[in-house]
Length: 415
Image: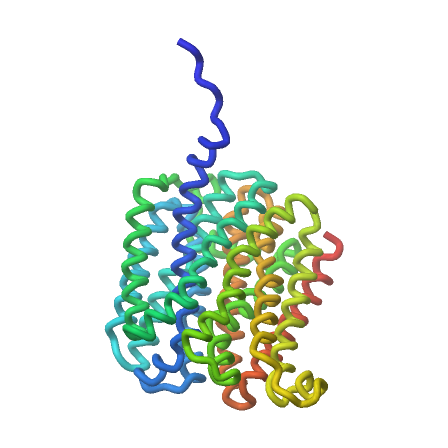
């Protein structure tokens, strides 16, 4: 009988590609849930009796819970395996989505956001940790972009499709759909994702010591610049796509809900396709640090351009005082999305500068910074919007990106 040929690339894709993509669906769900308020902020606020600025504070609880869960989830992934953690988190997401769809009032919505933040906190870490264990650092850069791209497709669902669902069936229908989606992903995880035992680093160590290790790695000189840029990068992206992009187009540009959802679609497509393209470009160019610096600078300038092009803004005034067409905003948001989509390379950069046995904890530290930044920056945008309006929010986000990019360039220049 002839010997079997070695595993083909197709078999390799089945062995690790399918589990990674199934787990990436969880990240897709997480993105859908965190960006849902962008197209429903007015109807949610009216239903639960809060202003748009107050609702921004309530949705910030999602990011606070998400950030708080990073270290426990990072430790749990090492101790109990990806499959067990993923199924547990999907169960929590289902409960949180049902809570959001059924409870009333600001306090009920706040509770639902906290539960959803806890449930979603490991949806990106699960596929990233599995990829870090299965792939080389060179392969990881490409696959991390693919995982982020698939996950960011959740923002596509929360654009026009979700706007249509909310328009016709109410905002609670969006959370019911998310609950059904979570159950469906869990059904796929069970046959396609195998569980692994605890890694060598977890053997004989206490949970507290492992949690301290995550913090220590995150504060190390190798990761310091990466963590600083991560703190602002996702915060800006989710503030625009997840909260203020919709109100900007509806309140400042006077578009309807479905029109605003359509106008956000190019930005969302850029956030889906961009990470995959940057993964390929990173592998071919070897200029990861420069890609990150240029991408974040361009993203900052795009937000400043949006603010300046508002009716009465300096760009509008310099062009004769007329109102620029809404296509300018759509194009600037598209440029912002195409540039900020470089952010998954922060994971690849972090994976490359630590020893393999610390890869999972390094990813947890970077993800913690991503979502701690989202919580802090999004909370800061609420009083800014209330005091000075949405244009001030865009200026603030652009300034935060500029400052963080400068710090990243300084802290990583020797590396």
